[in-house]
Length: 326
Image (cartoon, rainbow, N blue to C red; front, side, top):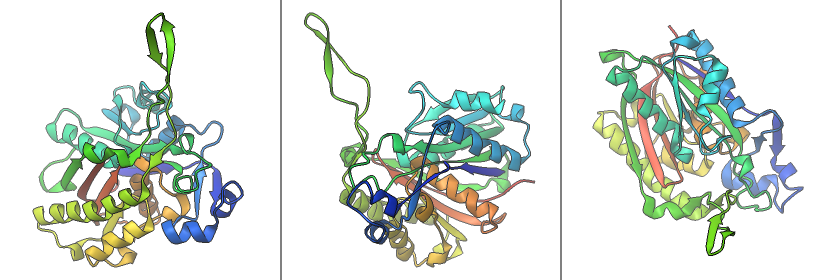
C-alpha cells in the first residue's frame, strides 16, 4: 500500500575513499558498480533512519498510525542489541502495534516481508510495516580496501495490508539457509575473555569488523540466486519475459547483470541504485523499490521478482505485484 526510504546526508565518493586507502574510482566502479555511499553522521542512527522510511510509507498508504498491528524491523545493526523496533514504533505513534527485530543480514527485508505476510494471511493482523535498515558503517574496517568500498547506510519500508483471494499481491516465495557456508561473511563477537573471580573468566562484549570472502560470496550469489528464482517462477507458472521488473539485493553490479543474463531479462528491467548507495544490507531492496515507485518506474499492477542473499548464508525470492495506495 505504500513505501518509504531514508538515507544519511553524508556522501562518500570513491575518490574520497582513495584519500584513506589505496584505491580509486576506476578500480571500485569497474569491479562493483558502486560510485558512492552514504555514511551516518550525528543524529542519523538506525532507529531514526528506520522511522523516517516508515513514516513516509505510512503517509503514502494514508494510514492512521494507530491502525498498525505490526512493526517488523529487519536489521543486523540495531542501536540496541535488545531491539530497535520498539523505539521506531514509539516514534511513529503506532501504539497498538507489536514491534520486534528480525536478523537475517542482506536477506533480512525479504525474510521480514514473508514473515509479516503470514500474520496478515492468518487473520490475526490487518496492517503491518516492514522495514529493512542497516548502518554497516559502524562495523566496516575503513582501512581494509577490499571491504570498505562496498557498504553504506540506508533504510526502506513498505506498508502491507491484509486482503483476500485474487487481490493478494504476494504470488509466491521461497526461503533458504545454509549454515555450513556461513564462514564466508561474518560480523563476529570479539573473542576476548577477562578475569571475573579466581578461576572464572567472562567474555567481553563487542564485535569485530565485517569479514568477507568476496570470491566465495560472489560464486554463491551467481549460482544460488538464479536457481531459487527459477524454482519460484516455475512453481507459479511465470515466464521471465512476463516480469516488469527484477529487483535484487544491491551487492555488486556483476551479480545483477549475471542474474539478468541467465533469464534473458533486459538490463533496463533490472532496478538498481547500487551506484549511489552501495550495499545497505537489509535496506537495499525496499530503498530501491521506493525510489522506483516515487519516480514512476514501478506502477500499480507491475509484476516484480525479487531476491535477497547474504550472510548466514541465507537467500530467498518473492514474486509480487505492486499495488500502491487506494
